[in-house]
Length: 417
Image 1 (cartoon, rainbow, N blue to C red):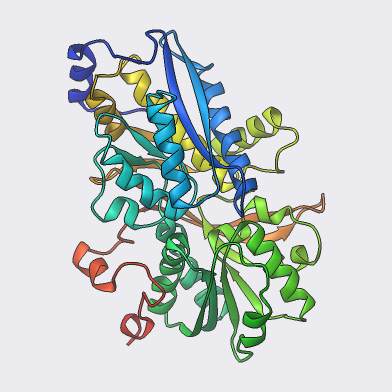
Image 2: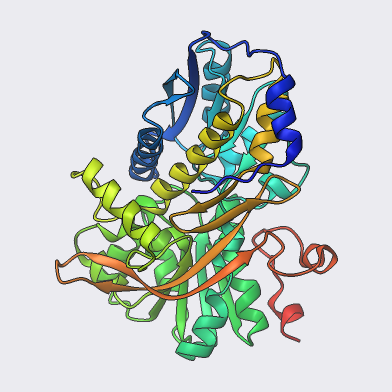
């Protein structure tokens, strides 16, 4: 990875007083990841990504040992804030890396504003508003948001698959709206039609009513759920005899879902999707990262999940910024904030830099699910779009006119008059 720092950061590193860390020779990180609920397995793989990044720095910065404390969550915003407060107030961490889920991120953005002298580095949560609406100056996100992840998929299924009429099912919370929006904006602009939208609460168990209500006269169904919700839905859909083409939201085809057993696996083969990575991408940085993950975690997933990759990149951004200031944090962490803002990285899945809201501009991968020779499922590389920003290539005025992600946004008719 490469690090570019503006001259002011170098000045801050020289002029800033020595940090008041928990201990003079220790940097203490609070790590947040789900350990119960629908995103438990994504949380576990996120921890693997975090540990892999620490290993790159041998667990220290400028002779200071890195310690970390886990704040276990259940992907709900209330629990996330409680764990964050405990990490800051009781565990005395220097900064937090987390959370994983969209609504958790929104809650921690607001909590960050109450602790201006500390720092929160988002790990994997992807709600758009977290960094776009009233962002916190001490909150940083080193990966694209959910709308960026979804962009490019809509035009791909229209132009390459010929699927122009779809029904959609997505998770009924902030990330579900955001990831769906990225797909829908692109799909509708390409001439697609969304005939009906369905929304699923997190942790749903019985999907029979929605499966029964799905229209049959569509080319495909967009499915934007993840974790155990995705697995349960696919099993029930297969049992009900569903055979309509599936378009996968980003977390629908993550390795934490692809490794599921049973009929869910059969339904996923051939599913196009988009996100932050492609399992078989031939880039040497990606291949080296996958090899390092597999060697470090032989009992992990066949390839790193997007959660592992996002936690890895977020942690690398933090460690690179710490290295730039020699691990010496100002009392108000102003030098750390400046160093974080200046980080640019050639990550395993593409180049990352931050915009004025401390939000990543990065690459989006278009993929399709295939079965490998080993019988496992993988996302095979189809296309890649670089430098995707949070406004999806539009001006701020054009993007804001669409509206913030919600059940009803975007209006497909307005985008495809």
